[in-house]
Structures are given as C-alpha cells and as structure tokens.
Image (cartoon, rainbow, N blue to C red; front, side):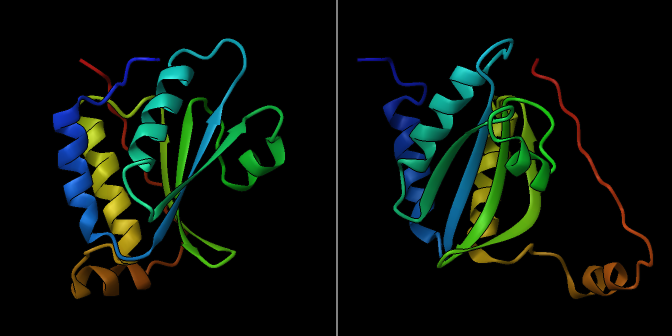
Length: 148
C-alpha cells in the first residue's frame, strides 16, 4: 500500500470542511508521462482530496495526449489543475488554475477554491462586482508563489 500524503488529522479536518460543499466540483488534473517534477505527487494529493467528498469528481489527463482539452482550458504546464463547477454534464469554468503541486500554503488555497466553486459564488462585494462589470478589456491575472 502506498503511503498517504494527507495524514489522518488533516484528512479529517478537510472532510469536515467539505461538509459545507453545495454543488458538484470537477477537478481536471493534467500530468505528463516524462520530465514532470511533482506530477505523481500532485496526482496522488488530488486523488486523496477529491476522495474526501462525493461532491468532488476527478478527471485525469495527459497534457500531451489530451492537448486539445489542455488548450481548451489554457493549461500549458504540468502538473496542472483546473477547478470547474459541474451541473449535470455541463462544466462551469471559473478560470481557476493551479500550476505545480498545491502544497504548503497553496494547499489551503486549493481547499478554499474548491469551496468557492462548490458554492458558485466568489464572495466578492457588490461594489467589486460592479467595478469588474465595467471593465472594457480582458484582464489576465496570475498569482505566483514558490514553495519555501
């Protein structure tokens, strides 16, 4: 048996938080067969996380073999994660992506983002929503972090 990445205490805490999940979430994992540092670990981690709730579903893809799907979701790095809402056979893409393994502080961001997608609400104030609605050009926002 392979050793789990999440210890029992962390898994129990995450499972408790996931009791509040509302809608279904699909996580798309994009790995790569060769030259992919952390692909195996990221896949294992996301398998453990999605296994903690019936509201979470996982699709496993290869960034090269499934290049069309990767391009559709604008995934150009492996390991990569896409979080989408799931309504029947429809995916709702909120633009949430992770490149690399979501470990350390990024693990909390992953859990928080799964909750946000499940609730179908960003939590932004009405003032912020109104401001964003008035934007005339697309904005590409990226947040970079490094494991330390």
